[in-house]
Image (cartoon, rainbow, N blue to C red; front, side, top):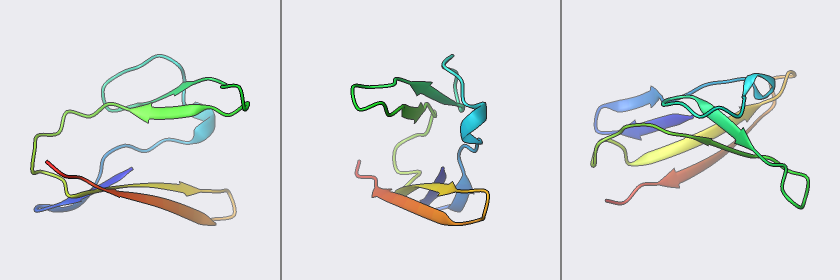
Length: 76
């Protein structure tokens, strides 16, 4: 997960899918599920003040280095 804001782009959290557990903790991904559709939900907690980020992007990279990315704008 990458954040972009006034101070520039920075890495907020990083993990391989097979290493993500179910115990929550600050700054680390946590997995829950599976849901009725057999998919898992991934989340991460970060302590980031207002106006420090304008965009957060989640990037998934497979072992063949193929990537997909989802980006969300932050409004405060």
